[in-house]
Image 1 (cartoon, helix red, strand yellow):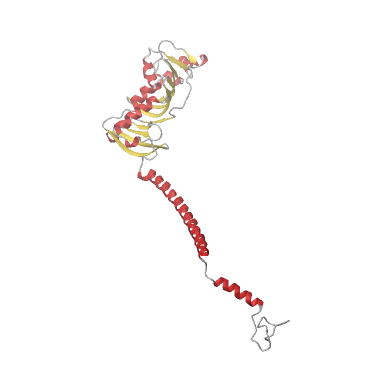
Image 2 (cartoon, helix red, strand yellow):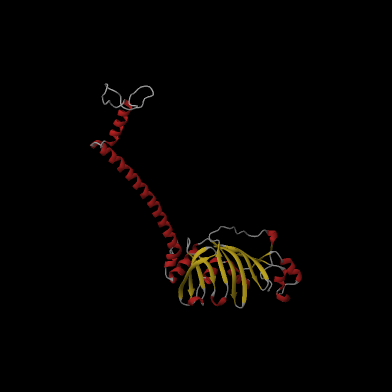
Length: 302
């Protein structure tokens, strides 16, 4: 049906009888929109479109660079961690492990002497006897225990005043060989006994409470010094120095903080000692009057 009107199609509208007709208004609008879409961009339009594309590309490039940078930073951190763990055993340490053995020993002695306090524990074999030590030491004295021949002595030194505390069996001596009778031994048991400075045992016992004397003697390695492996001792990163390849003793030195001794294996199997609590404060005090017994100018032999 060619005519327009109610119910008619959107076809040709008659202009005159027998004429070819014109496009309906709806058809003209759709063709005009399609024509606009097909029309090429003018110069300003092209520039605007190119600007939008360029901005989008820059943003995309920036996002890629940020992600790449973050990934690179992660690789750098991971690489540093791997270097510390595998490539460079001295990474993150006090640098002592890079030094020759002689310098490490010298630095260790100086650092140990400069420390105000230390706890020393382990075993010492000397003159055929084995002593188990657990001593806390400072510049003006020390306190702790020494176990030998089945007896444990509590030692306390404050300045020049040296005290000894032990059980009755110690005062009676091994197999009762001491010269203290049972009554005297019972009186001395569990009490702090002041050791007279002129008593032969004063020098021997006070040595266990003297920080500098103990450290100077114990930290001596015998034979040609050498440097051993890096490692970990009691949770502390350490470097090892040895005397005669270990036959003259082995000392583990801290690579964390100050280069202080961590563990000593004495020459010839003469004991193993640990050094802990460097710089940890503790108090030394004279025992109360009720805790002490004055034995006189000389102690009983035992």
